[in-house]
Image 1 (cartoon, rainbow, N blue to C red):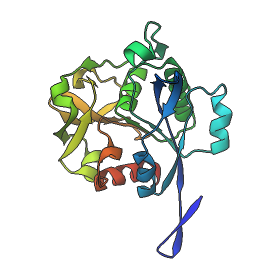
Image 2 (image 1 turned 180 degrees about the horizontal axis):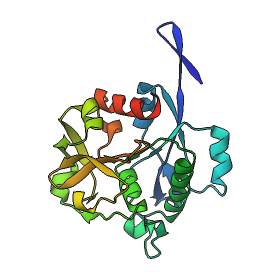
Image 3 (image 1 turned 180 degrees about the vertical axis):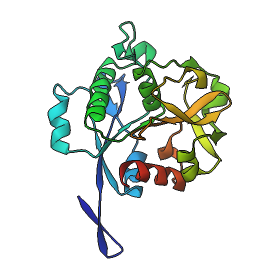
Image 4 (image 1 turned 90 degrees about the vertical axis):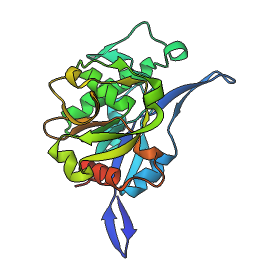
Length: 233
């Protein structure tokens, strides 16, 4: 897929992106939702985002038809599984946990690994990846982390080359990941105090960030470079 820029054509990457599940209490409808800002962010990284429905009966044919170049596991909702096992006692109404989303994302993540597709998990998406590898998470102080911003320190050369040594990021998460609790499959790349703010795996195909790049206006140039480096270069 191509788009025209500065009188020449460039390739646009096709990226799948997962969606939050909500209940419309007036109509009782269960809906998949995605912030419109993500589509604006897609243009900034020369990509088209394809939302992945949470209630697909056959995910694999859908993915093969789209021929995706990578996957974003977006934010929203709470974690509904650990070590690939779905929590049975959690609900969307009480716990903000969608079992359908969790089942779909488990299959999607396995597909991405098998097909060597680059992945970025954002906020809940990062927590999902951590839980997939049997990592633990903790409840954190909402006064510090919800609708706030703070400075994080990068501790990995791969990310330092993109972001520098430190940067201020937004924060909207209720759960965090202690550095000591990160599973062996993942490498911490930035921290806030003793909590992991981003990670990657050993071949850089799997990445996680706790902040929301789509909520910055204008978008952060370092986030744009990171997403381009992951999906395009």
